[in-house]
Length: 83
Image (cartoon, rainbow, N blue to C red; front, top):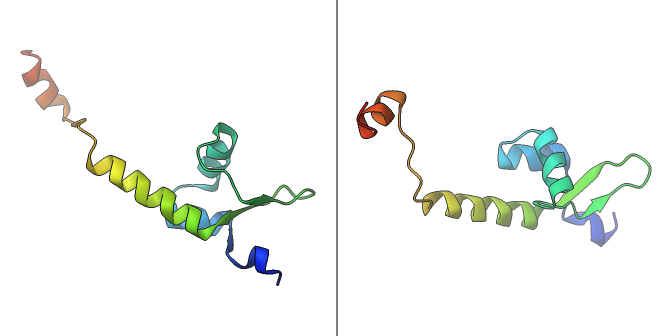
């Protein structure tokens, strides 16, 4: 295999690593959020650089860890709003 393709993974493997669907990855590609390293010109099959996928996952987890947004149950929300 060409060295250029040695570090590439199929869309399903990338989806598994990120715990998302292939549809989500296609959507992220269209939005520019996570762009594949290579798209086959005939089949449109997406291939991702494994290091890019792992970095994206690490960045996402880091953002979640420091995200100040808190999630409340419906009852907690009513209590906090004085309802």
